[in-house]
Image 1 (cartoon, one colour):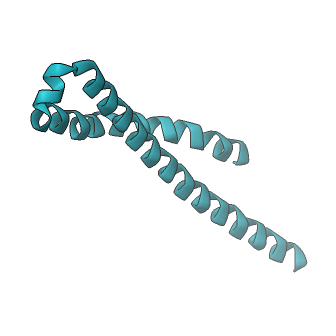
Image 2 (image 1 turned 90 degrees about the horizontal axis):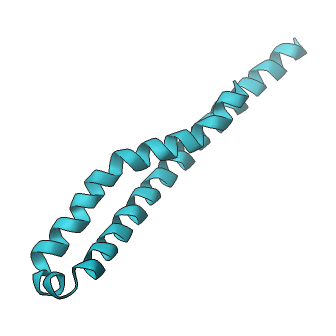
Length: 91
């Protein structure tokens, strides 16, 4: 079980990152194009790069948050299992 738990964080991060990237992409690209139209027409590359970086940053943050939360839950579970095994060995 421990080897499975050790492999979960990277997989979970990538899963959450891929899942949230289109959502954050829309949240960063649409306002950049609609509300900063003048800047977009003048230098579309700069606006698109900023929106892309914002989308990646937001998706990575949420992925890391989920990994931290789930790692905490796994640690609590393993800790309680070790306490149960320790108390059972005392009896």
